[in-house]
Length: 74
Ligand SMILES: [Zn+2]
Image (cartoon, rainbow, N blue to C red; front, side, top):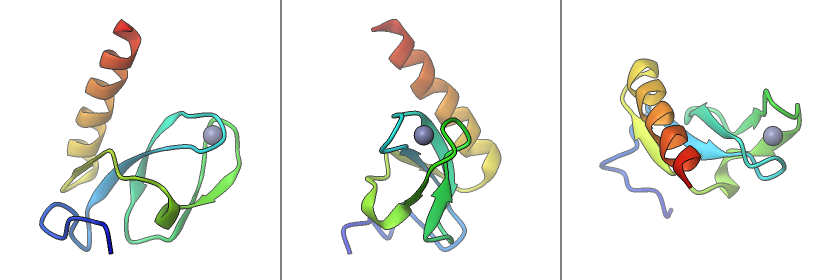
């Protein structure tokens, strides 16, 4: 299935980018689709590469803030 089963568990939170506005979002990987809170569009999580993951929402948020900080440096 393309996903690393060791990294993405049943209750993992993944970092994905919105295909429309490219915003980084935290997605509960238990769901198949997500609405982007920036542009409001809905997209399928299956189609998106998982850029990172956390075991819980807090871990995912920390990872997301690190990734945003890196993106800002460019
Ligand atoms: Zn968006």
